[in-house]
Amino acid sequence: MDPDAAAVLEVRDLVRTYGRFARIPAVRGVSFRIGRGEIFGLIGPDGAGKTSIIQVLAAVLGPHGGSASVAGLDVVAHAERVKAIVGYMPQGLGSNLYDSLTIHENIEFFRDLRRLPADVYRENRAALLHATGLAPFLDRRAGQLSGGMRQKLALICTLIHLPDVLLLDEPTTGVDPISRQEFWQIIRRVVAQRKTTVLLSTSYMDEAERCHRIALMHEGRLIADGTPEDIRSRATGRFARVEATPQPRAFALLRRRPDVRATQVFGDEIHIEFDGELRDIERALVADNVDVHDVAIQPPGLEDVFLQLIGSPAAAGEEVRFDRVPPSTAAAAIECTQVTRRFGAFAAVDRVDLAIRQGEIFGLLGPNGAGKTTLIKMLCGLLEPSDGTLRVDGAIGYMSQRFSLYQDLTVRQNVRLYADLYDVERSRYLALMTRLGLDPFARRQTRDLPTGVRQRVSLLCAVLHRPPIVFLDEPTSGVDPRARRVFWDLIYALSRDAGVTVVVSTHYMDEAVHCDRLALMHQSRLVAVGSPRALAQRAGEEAGQPPPSMEDTFVHFIRLAEAAHA
Image 1 (cartoon, rainbow, N blue to C red):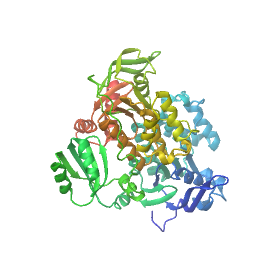
Image 2 (cartoon, one colour; image 1 turned 180 degrees about the vertical axis):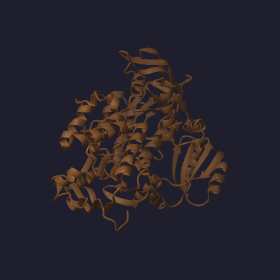
Image 3 (tube, rainbow, N blue to C red; image 1 turned 45 degrees about the horizontal axis):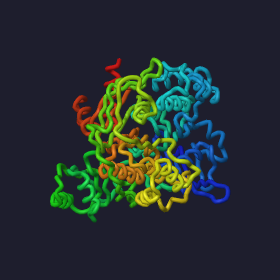
Image 4 (cartoon, rainbow, N blue to C red; image 1 turned 135 degrees about the vertical axis):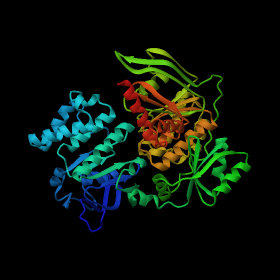
């Protein structure tokens, strides 16, 4: 913003700590200013301090150092006046809603809370219901809504008094791409029409591109701020993509080169950060009997800059090798033929045909309520299909999004518990802990672990018994980019080195491109299956344009399915 312009939101040297005795810093001297009509993003992983800053500005928490103001009002001295002019949407899918109330009743409750005049309420309610598309569902209870619908209802309740300031804490976490696009359209419309000031937080780097300005946060500190273009311009080194076979050999060779700073597999491609000349790297691969199909320079992304600022991915996990599972003679590791699951008259999964190859990284994507979870439960043996047949070739490992570990046990106790359940030898699980870099955390309770480390422990517990198939349910939700890259290195090692079939469900579109193939589900059915590149090319051809982003590809196929269904 213009440094001379008046700030609507401002924090100066803000400090916030937690704990009665040992004060743990959550926010460490953060300063920024946001002007009228700006969309400002706090970007960073869980634990970066984003929620604490938003709660201070919402006058929910008080600062322990520095100051914060909203429209010139100090959040401590004028807390009630601040609360009256902001709309605050807390973290979690519709966490400000009452599940036992209907959509209509929730909106009425927030009208009464804000003491809106009847005419103002009617006008605002009609406009917001039209914008969100929730008008046909007014009698549905909030507890029966999908994640996307819950977030849209939560936004209506936050916007019902048309505040001048919106504070949105991770508003699209766990929301499918279509609902995310619709959510952002509403935010942009409010900003364009009313010059509303928006401060939002997210752990999704791709959402940062939709903000006017962003602040990258790490461990309670602001490490960079500016427009997305400003942040990307801070990247050092060069970036490229390499497509080569055999890919595991190319990957290993690139990792060993001193002029290659970082490597990451994205489906058919290996993305590298490097110094020097790209042609020298290409020649070296060819000299080592690698067939190079394509090499091209590409611009850095915000995630690349973030990783440079906080340090490249930790060594833990970079050279992990899992024991290879016995090869299967079956044509496919997983086969579904006309698989259907009904709950009464409702078909949660409807005539799904699917074949997943051994050693494949397979992504399962779809809006909330599309049928992904029901399909996974059937593949895991937790539900029986109502019709059709399915076959899973061997034992499975399962990493749940919400419950994989006992929070009051240490890392070693959790791993030992799973090892005893699977009758795994002590020497094996101790060796795997060492390979995954978990020895320094062995005596810590899992509730106290960084999110990325906790996810590594969960993955270890899921693969201790050497299953040939592993199901991962949104495994990197809320994980910072550095830990996410380490985690995907582990998935890659499981697939390529150990031959494990990995089935991943995710809403994170940048993550979908890590998969060999994707299956898109909508309204209980499969609507498209293919590699990320093939799906994007097909979507571009059908729309008469270049291949779109993965998110736009997803939306394209879902819209086609909706049109066909209508």
